[in-house]
Image (tube, rainbow, N blue to C red; front, side, top):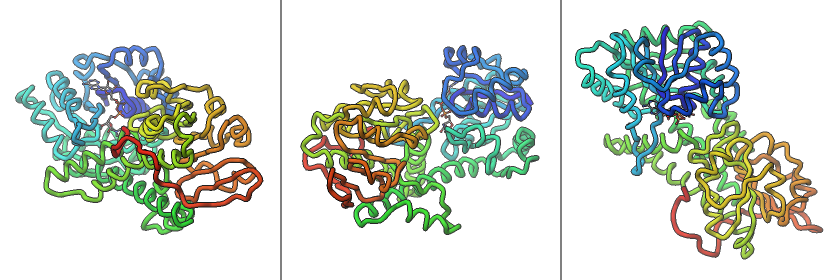
Length: 463
Ligand SMILES: NC(=O)c1ccc[n+]([C@@H]2O[C@H](COP(=O)([O-])OP(=O)(O)OC[C@H]3O[C@@H](n4cnc5c(N)ncnc54)[C@H](O)[C@@H]3O)[C@@H](O)[C@H]2O)c1
């Protein structure tokens, strides 16, 4: 089939390369001409494992193309996928302006019987509204509209797309469903479950899935807070509850809170949709509040340990991406936490294997470092905020040896308290009591310090 994808970001590029891999003829379109020029030069403008190789082989096979010109690139398409951003408005509701603009852009040029497929994450009712936009622009044109939400995760996007647990699409038009069945036939033939449903259901499935996953993260973080106070170990608790197949072990890693380009904005949009339709999503409203407050709370734990030395302290932050294996810093917990430390007078040195360029656009007064050891050198404390494998493999004795102070805040639980036995470090982690270790004294576990005595500028989020 001939397919066009509007938006060559994380989702659009992965979708384009993977659909080409499934044998389709694909043109990826982006309004950012510089991005298109780089793509045409064989460069992948984002960091996503395996994507470069997949793109290169499909470009070579004559199935994958790039363009900045929507009009010429969608005219022959059997289906046009819209994969543009759907960020949050100031009030938390979804900003549909990019999706609407994309629909207007294709309305005048799609051929009769074309299927417009909304891959962007959109609130229920959006496909219906886009149908009206296209009909307004194009009058009597016969076309179909479908929702095909994307469930890929950055960092494993290619395998998530090519080996998904399910493909969901929804349309109230059987012709659109037939075209989507054809597009995804290679996956169905490999045994992937392809769920066909209504437009509204497909839109609701995406938000409900993300809201539920975010709830699991929020829940285990609340359990972690309790563990810190009462001497529990959240990893053991998570393992114990995860053995129950009704709960499952996925998404039960306590940490610095959820971030990224999806969960924060999608939970906000889900809550806003509930408010709009008089179906309040109280659980999600509370979840959002707790998650937004978490960065400040974790900064305060560090500041409380530093005490009166916090003002003027040098802190090394390891990890700026919202999670490992991506350069995406959108709503990264790290970027929300750093300003709380800066407000308290800390100087920040930072390192991330892939995300420093993106982070530099959003942070002020940061020294970026070559590697973790360089960041830790002469620092009073080190905070780990992204679970990169290269941090897991750090030589902790070497790291501790280069530091001026002795505070290690492991907010991804990369290590065990027992790994600190021979190190002269105070070790803070998530959902486990703080380990204070001073030379010549035994290791002692204490409940986590929560509040800083000195005042930090008010506000529930540093973002
Ligand atoms: N990133 C993820 O992990 C992920 C996963 C599942 C779903 N989603 C959803 O997919 C959608 C896209 O997310 P993303 O992370 O790929 O966004 P992104 O910001 O990485 O990419 C969007 C791209 O669309 C381009 N664009 C915007 N309007 C355009 C237009 N009218 N014509 C041509 N190009 C246009 C932008 O220049 C940008 O390159 C969002 O709705 C998101 O919620 C994202």
